[in-house]
Image (cartoon, protein in one colour):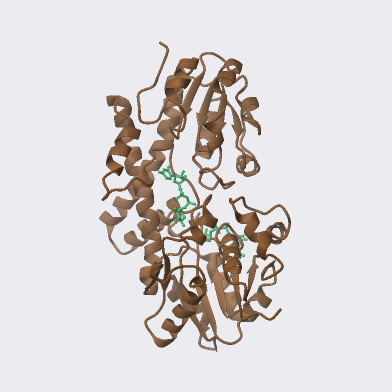
Length: 458
Ligand code: UDX
Ligand code: UDX
């Protein structure tokens, strides 16, 4: 079949895979290629067992793969053929060197830019999809255009705002699509070329055009503001536990003010995911590098409050269970960083497991989708860890259940049946406030909600 246009994406991860699949679905006249250096991952994209779990993704892949959506590892070919090259490689936090623990590690970005330079022929629009520090486009431009070998290209920032677990829905019905380009004739043309892709299904009024720098910064700030709401509400949970207020009532009352809004005000054991912490630390690093210490410190506290919340959760468990967890069996309901995903990056479950093992507890982990990732995350940790698919089996013989992920299925379990199989006293620590605490209490559980007084039998 003759395609009107070829576009590609470098990086077939949580962002690149679903984003390109939806573009392929909505733009059947485009050839969409997704390439990655990881051969095993590409093989999974081409199989019946996709490398990531996302509701609705399988259907989109089934409708497009082999028709106008192709997954492969031949970067040179994809770069040569494509007019538009999306780059969605990972930008983790630097582990060592200058800015370690804060700044973004741009090594993959830089090597991708060099690969593009090596294989590009003709004019290319290079689209930043990965979250990047402000002014990365500048560095990219310098790599793509050195004096001896200047390629014709335009760099556009088009950050992705999808959330995992609802990626397909977010892609199909985005609140907004942001396109940042230079204010030059070539820049404007490139922005229009990207806009044309999204206009296949996104109403024009939802597409925002801005400068490259505003676009890059908007992505960091959006994530920082979302995370800040969670840390803000979480910071009130200890206060509720002491005073007898209930965080769910507080958050509902505050959120009903239309100026505040109710979303992202659910208190939790802590936020996770690949973006929030990384992007805030990135913002902190940038602010600090410009000497803006107060700005840096302000945002840094969002992350510190999150660490405090995870730490506090474990501390509550220890205190509640008579100051010792040694040889106790603790069952974690959920390991994914949120419901409806298999992703475990930065999940609070990891920290909690480590701390419980340090207390000599045995940890049983159950999760409907994330056990494979949990196994790999916990490889090498010494201590007694079990992975059990069935939550009833997982809870059997446990002294306590800790709800870490808000999977819907945990709401509907038969807790009477679970209670009967547990050690007594049987504790439940609801790190997501998704369970019916009064009902659990009347079954005999010692119930510890988050941000409310515990319901106990003594
Ligand atoms: C990534 C970034 O982490 C995030 O900051 C950004 O907003 C979007 O891209 P994600 O898709 O979740 O998010 O990352 P990941 O699932 O790790 O996928 C990145 C892919 O890039 C991996 O499959 C990796 O193999 C690939 N990659 C990495 C390359 O193809 N080439 C490289 O040089 C490096
Ligand atoms: C986030 C942004 O939402 C998305 O726009 C961006 O593109 C990538 O980063 P994601 O990390 O996939 O998406 O999930 P999100 O739904 O934002 O949740 C992040 C974390 O916050 C999860 O651990 C979640 O459980 C937690 N959370 C969310 C809360 O603890 N309370 C809330 O009220 C909402």
